[in-house]
Length: 425
Image (tube, rainbow, N blue to C red):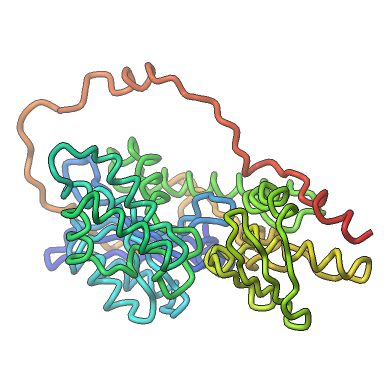
């Protein structure tokens, strides 16, 4: 059993299965320790009954999946998405801090605006990039359109965005016209978004889960649910062990500490001038020769990377180094004080305190009599004619693919302390 879980099933007027919603108790409780960004997406089921598998997921600070809920719907429409989001709202209440990320499906946009009026909603820039490149004029390399669009979307400051977008407009006027006419800029451009979505701007986490359950989507309902819960339990245990294996001296998650470590040698070479010592304000001359005002008290920098990502940019690190060097042994400031609480190992581990249990064998189920009396017919379906489009041996092609062994730098720490300890001596 998974205590605290929330499930719901909806049948139509003929008692035929229509919708399913499942949110496991451990995920519901653990989400309070996650960044408040939820990615929603749907993918097709591969059974005779059709339908779609829906996910609502977050991403933990070390860039791992953190599934919150999943469900089954007949298709992506206003009714189905509103039903799923209403059930999600029962476990994740509406909140101004909440941000949804999805593709531009009209039913998702409609559902989020009605069910979560306080939350913000942004478009996945990868999906949007596919729409944008479709408007490119003939002879243009569409991959170049995507790359340039991503640069515009990732701009941290308005001035940087305008420079990038002006260039984008000159190169690809039809694509730029599509964006200006059809898409609100604050839904895709990082610098115009008013809220905290950190560095999350795609629905890749859900897309990745769709791929993980590619084979399971061919199963009938109950076996598929068992497989999904089993995978959620595996991930939860894996990342719990990863948290527990962290050295007690480590304060932030490996992904963030390694980024900070890479920035330290650059920060050490920057020129820093104290502007207001009492207010922790500093001028830092960047590698581009531009002077950036850093406010350590409010955790901001004129480059806006500090403001948006919620961990120190290279200019903020330089300011922290200058402050520590000035205060010497009496300094109580730490670079980790400049990171959002969501990037702390302590916070990260709290998200995995509760255990997700796999579904036990049917022989040990204890089902109440009133539930046993309930009955649901399967959905209507239209038999498809013709040969199965899939090959006779689906795994044949997969066996030919060579998997590259890649090292995951998120799982290893670099020694960030080397950059700060000598300054307090």
